[in-house]
Length: 291
Image (tube, rainbow, N blue to C red; front, top):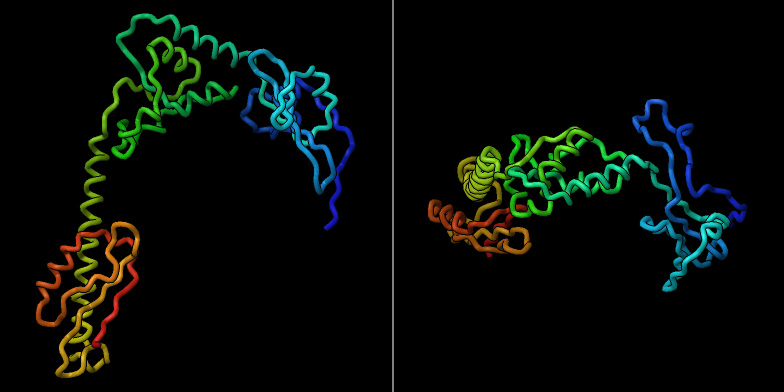
């Protein structure tokens, strides 16, 4: 397949790229103006070449050229005249900048407060980077009952940020959402459900192993009326040999574990199977050997 590089110059604005004419009519976005953040340029042909990038420091507005290990300060006209390969724009909103600064100012006031509120770290990251973060959503660390799911409690500090009351009230009044959280606790309902699930899994695996052992016996003697009839039992007069049960060989599982012979010792066999005390997640079947 033949490919080639288009070398036609494409003009692009550094600021004020208006995309409203290209949005769907029912788009909920209120901010449709974008400013250039960075540019990737390619020098060479379609088959080979070299990449450089121009990126703006959002703190001081200065542009820099990144060419492998070299970083050089450049004027914005250099960026505007570049042959762009990829353009990166971000939404422009003076209001979002003012809101972030307001939150910083409120946090620095250090007003005495009896209440502290927990907010989703994920949503707060959106607030710090998005012009339209949407309503506050604390359900990233809450369960449907309003508590902390037991499986998240041990790393809850990674999911939440503590805010003073004045900062929380400002964010809540500005964006809505929630719910408000000023106390973290493990959800008792979820804990009961989790324990019930663990108990159910244990019952199911015990039942499964018991059914395998007893089912093999019944197939030979109960349903088929004799071991030799279906060709699955030992020839008459020969002793029964151990069942070899093969489990998934993942860490912590038992592989090629011999179960004591049967028939004649069913309850002992079942008890020894139960003593394996493993959670069988991957069953590969079993085989009976008469040799």
